[in-house]
Every structure is written in structure tokens, then in C-alpha cells.
Amino acid sequence: MSTTPTPPNPGQPQGARPAPPPARKAPAPAAAASQPAKPQQPAAAAPEEEADDAPSGGGGKFVLFNAVPSYMVSAVVHFFAFIILAVITIEPPKQQNQVAVTATKTEELEEVEDFVEDKIEINVDETNVSDTRSDVVAQIQSDVVETPVDPSLAMDVDTAAVHVELSDFGEQTAPKNDLMQAVGSVTGSGVSGRGEAARGAMVAKIGGNSASEAAVAAALQWFAAHQNPDGSWNFDHRTGPCQGRCSDGGRMTDCRTGATAMALLPFLGAGQTHKAGTYKKNVEAGLYFLTSQMKVKNNAGDLAQGGGNMYSHGLASIVLCEAYAMTHDKGLMTPAQLSLNHIVYAQDPVGGGWRYTPRQAGDTSAVGWQLMALKSGHMAYLQVPPGTIQGAVKFLDSVQADSGSKYGYTGPGAGQATTACGLLCRMYLGWKKDHPGIQRGAEFISKIGPSKGNMYFNYYATQVMRHYGGEGGEGAELWDKWNKEMRDSLVNGQDKTGHQKGSWYMKGDHGSEAGGRIYCTSMATMILEVYYRHMPIYGKAAAEEEFPL
Image (cartoon, rainbow, N blue to C red; front, top):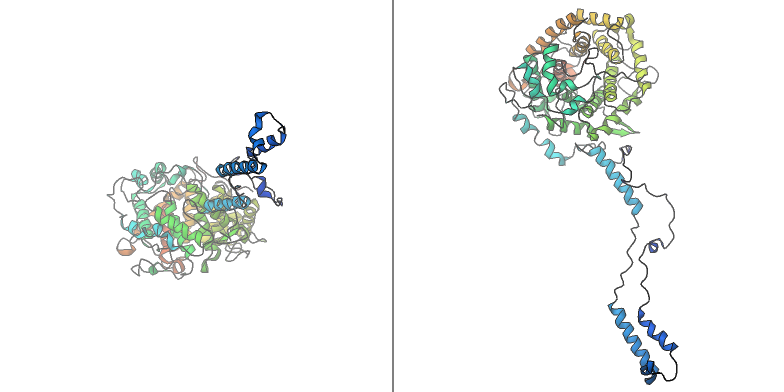
């Protein structure tokens, strides 16, 4: 833990452990000060004193001492003195604990390590996953086999199973977890929709169906079957347990943090955490892998790898903050905050955006992932500086067009994917539903319609349309039209047979060549979770908290 910044000692109760005393030189015989007092001189000396005081003449009171030579008296006295001393046990002085102060410091360090590693045994200093974690990851593959995607599975509230009864499906896939009612994550709204009570009702109300939920369950099983033994995923999924049985692996083989984050997000969206759910071992191993890859420097934790750079860091930060928000696991708090600190550090100090490397002039795509991570951390009550959010607003202002209804990549423009990303960012930064930019932007996206190949656009656009019209009222017709086409296209396009069952691959997608089947399946699954993944921004049940500006 030498590289991990020591977090503040959380809430030490009064008297739990006194603070170490001020450093000072102790007197040379410091240990003697606390030693037991010396025993009193043995009482055998008393007769000698009395003998000295005795009269020299008669008086038979001390006749014996007068009758014998003085050396005999001395011998008798010393004999009895030795006898008395022999039966008296003089305990050696107890050794003073000379390491009292340093022991206190050691205990504090162990407490900090427990704070970081507790619950899911996270250690942000590790660079490789320890083989001693076999009890966590060794069961991953066996757990996958034991989780069939079958509509007839028993009504177990912790089972991520397919069921044709729409109202009951959420009870099977969402674990019972009161923490689901707590704070929000990822894009900032509450996560209560992922819980047992709300999921089925929200699916029915907002436009999902049994087929869309079955597709989500099949996707989770596919992800679980393609997890590596060390808890990670790889964009080239064929290198792990798949052994080439699925096609279309991605080319970004050196960006495992990004791939692992994209695989974990759909699990969390379905209410599966490392604390509850059928896939809790998969989620736990994935979280452990992410934190083990974190490079900590100057109180910031970098999760970027390979070609992913700040993109992969933003995704991994979303995962850590969301998992912490859903479970309140203190073992995740420090890694999550460190990941946010790196985003704060990496922001372009001039333009306010983010791009591939820290402090580089920004682009809308990278800004979207970082802003969603910051929003996730804010809703989990982690520290997000207002100045960082103000910088993001400044960047969006610099790339907007048509009064904020359209957005470009690095400058003003009207790209489809960047417009969808920019509009969602504006929603979470406080623009209201009646803002002209939001209204015209939603109409612009509606006219484009769902893409057959660009899942990046579909991911952001579906969230914009759901928040704009998913709660009824103005925009409801736009949402209904969008949702039916998007939902049915994904359900019908999912692989239904073989080892690829439960996954998607769209050729020509924004990131399909780089991210492969992992990327496409992640995006598609999160789109189908849109009904309950986040509570609405503009509805009566909104769980939105605006950023502090």
C-alpha cells in the first residue's frame, strides 16, 4: 500500500484510539519510572537495632544476647536474614513497552488497509491480480454453467432468468437490496428502478416487454461465459474461455480496463452487484481486476490502458462509482474517489474538455464519458469540484450549434452521435425539458431515427428520447416511435444460437472494429435497460440532483 494515498481516518469515535503523544525525548531511565517500587528492607534488621539499644547490665530481658559472644549473635541474625530473603520473591521490574507510539501508528496503517481492501479485498496498489484470489475467480465458469437462460426457471428473486410474465421479470433479475433505494449513478439519476419492486412496473410503463427483458438476461449470461479467470474481459473475447467459438473479436487487445468496464455496466444496470445477485462472483472479480490495475500518483488513480486512454478511464470510473453508490461498500469508496480525482486532474485547463491524454484539448465523445463518471460520483456523495463542472459547461458551449440543439466533435457542428451525447450532457447539467435547445435537439434526433449500425449514437439518443418523452406529456409520441423501432431491432438482431447466443455485432458501428462483440453487446444491453437503469430526469419521480455550479 505504499503508493496508495492514505485516506482520512473515517469517523473515529471518542476514545477509540488516543492520538499518539507529541514526540519528545524521554529521560534516560524512562522505563524505570513505571517499574514496580522496590520492596521494603526485610524486617530481620530490627533485632540488630534493638540489640544496640539494650542496656549493658542485668535485666534478663536480653539475657541470651548477653550470655553468648557477639559473633554468635551476628551469625544467628544473618542466618535468619538469609532464610527470610530466601522465601521472599522479588519480581524483576516489568519491561516497559518501548514501541508504544510506533505500535499505534502500525495499527492505524492496518485500519486504512482494511478500509481499502475490506468487503471485496480491493488493493489499489497491486499491478497484477493475485493468484490467492482463486476462491473468487475459480468458480466463475462453474457459476455460468449453473445459470441457464430458461423461461421456466423458478421464481427466485436473485436469479437473472428469462420469464415471459412481464410483471414478474424484475423480481427474478433484480436482487432484494434496500440499497437500491439509495443514491444514483452513471448518468446521475436514482437507481431504485433496478430493484425488485420497481423494475417490472417501469418496464411496462415506459415501453419494454418480455422479449426485451429476455434479451437482457441472455446478454448477461454471454458476458459471464466470456470472463477471463483473472476477472477481466478482453475486447478480443476469443482469447479467453471462448477459445474462438464466437466471431468478431475487437482489435484493442491491450485495453482490458475498458473492456472490463463495458462488460460490468450491463450487470450493474440489471441490479447485479458484488453483494447480491446470481452474478455477484463475476461482478466481484471484475471490480477486483479494475482496482488492481489502478496506477495511483499524487492522490489520483489512473485506469487508462492501451488505445483506450481517457475513454477507458471514464468507463472504469463510472463502474467504480456506480458500484459504490449501489452497495455503499466502503472498500470501493477510495478507488472511486481516486478515479474521479484523475478526471479532475486530466481536464483541459483552457477549454474545459477531455480527450485521449490528460490536459489535452477536448472532444465531445471523451467529455461525455468523463461527465457521466463525475455525475455518478456526485450522486454517490463523492467529491466533485464545482470548477470541473463549470469547465465542462464551457466546453459544451464551445462545440454547440443552433442554440444548443446540435453539437460537433471538437468545434461547433451537427454530428448525429455528438449531438446525442451533447444533449444528454446538457440534461444532466440542468437544462430543463422546455429549453429550446432540448426541444429542437429531440426533434432532430427523432427525424434521424435509430441507426442500424451506430450503437454509440443509439446509446446516447435512446437516453435523450426516454428522458424527453418517456414519462408522457410533451415528447411522448417521439419516444413511443423511437422506442418501438429501437427495442424491436435489438431483440430481433441478437444472436440466438451457438456460443454467440445472447450477443450482438453490428458491422460499421462507431466502435465495432476496435471493441468487437464485447462493445456492441454492452451498448445494446444498456439500451434495453433504459426503462429502469435510471430514474427519469423530468418526471414526477425524478431522482435528479444538479451539479453544484
